[in-house]
Image (tube, rainbow, N blue to C red; front, side):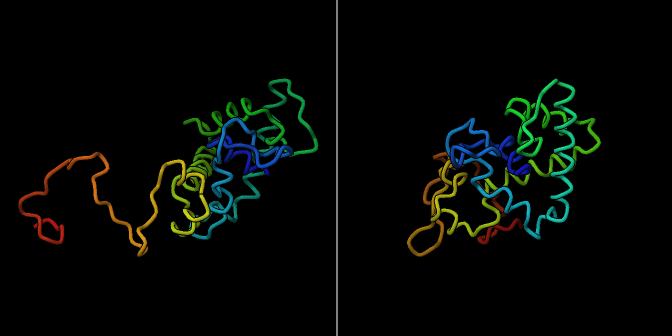
Length: 176
């Protein structure tokens, strides 16, 4: 729940249900949580899995300290970071990713994995993610493959060729 709240702070989405406390609900559509941020964080390839419990504990410690410094009363029914209002979550995350924070690399990494879940659905096969209506890929207008399962781009994304190939480029696209 704590890391979901962190991911939602990075890329907010709408609540999954009215009782959802991890997702603040400050945005419409699916954000990092609905895009699978925790699944991406848990992947073996990312290497973050073994550290997630420790990171959640650290984040809650920071939230408790932050609340004390700002005279906030936290709801004991949820983890401290989850109990923070969205604007306070944003302020705390800003402190954690600041250039001078000693844990910066860890918190930036969690933020990056949250973004990767939205931008690339890195934990899913792209065809499956599109078929399931993945929030990030859908929001970005990612087009699915042709009927034969291959992606083709018959027109340039900017509507024009941006650069001509170097005259010594081989037919395979390699430089001479």
